[in-house]
Length: 459
Ligand SMILES: Cc1cc2nc3c(=O)[nH]c(=O)nc-3n(C[C@H](O)[C@H](O)[C@H](O)COP(=O)(O)OP(=O)(O)OC[C@H]3O[C@@H](n4cnc5c(N)ncnc54)[C@H](O)[C@@H]3O)c2cc1C
Image 1 (cartoon, helix red, strand yellow):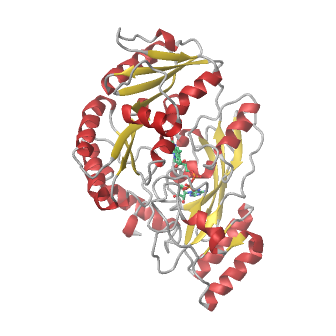
Image 2 (cartoon, protein in one colour):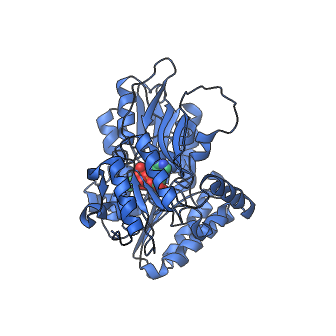
Image 3 (cartoon, helix red, strand yellow):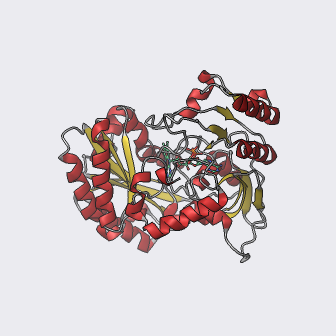
């Protein structure tokens, strides 16, 4: 933590403390440490202090005070983001105040008439899922960090996850939002009307803005009817083309709930690092997880004679199969600092792009381990590699340029954050970035929120 060296800073901290109470303005280096380093451990920075407001009104006062004092702010939810956007940059001359949303954690009961619910931004995803489930509904976004990631964080990053093929990304779930602008102004539109063409859709704009425009304080989301039963198959495949063909056949016959992939390295790491030995008869270049719903039956997937597969119908058995995919990030993390990219490519380009990415990493002699897993149905692959910091940037650029050359995206779901700010223009034109910057300067004219995130040096 940076010391409150000037009288101005000391006065600001005293005012902030009066708003939230001394217990919720953390200044002790030991207590702020976990807020200053991200989940990947690749990003770490200094903060002025950490503040934990308990209501939208408190958060509004906090931002108004910061705005008046010219104090920069770093917004943080569950700190599970994977692109460095949730923590301060290192070496900042004037470190930001970290605003944690974790005390804004109320989830309202389901409104059965509309099939919607309202939750405060700091509620963790699993709490939102649970309230929906207990009322007989389903929230359409799910991801492995569900017990720590907040609903506000998933909105700020437009999170994807394993159910996108069935329900869409986070933006598709949003029907209302409440947020606080940099100067403390509260904007609130939580009514949840499905038909409401009164001007700009600010919820859609804030979704995916990575905390550069405002602090999201509450969201109204649509819910879905859960499937009565699903059927999940883990299938060994020779290639992405074969896995995609299988997925396409499953989709033409039944409702596809999910289609994920893990390569041979990931399956090997699941065994060696997590003790999850493969349930398949042999090692395959690629393993596909394909889940279909209700009338569908994953055991009816058209396999070749050589392919082997296991099928799970019971929730407990399905959870065991899902663990191979959901615990991939954990398996790689056990090897040390992992460089991560999350890309998406058009499905008809996938095999070629993945072959080329494999070649790029295979010839890099300093890379000690690399592999791919991801959301097959969405063309979204997570690229993981381990190697010295010195070669990371060159490899990153080579991979992202290859993806962009096939009309892919350099960020399928994690966002740009700090990690990919220098590569933003590989996926978006200068005209598009200028249009985004114009919105940024209208909403946050002095650049107080999440400085450096998304736009890098441009803000
Ligand atoms: C094991 C693991 C698995 C994951 N799987 C997936 C996956 O399948 N799909 C996926 O999309 N992501 C995945 N993630 C990434 C991460 O969980 C998501 O990006 C999630 O949305 C981050 O939520 P958070 O609350 O942790 O946000 P944080 O990490 O705290 O913040 C992320 C960004 O959002 C901003 N932000 C946070 N809260 C707010 C707010 N209330 N208002 C404005 N800005 C805010 C932050 O400033 C930062 O820029 C995974 C992460 C882990 C560790």
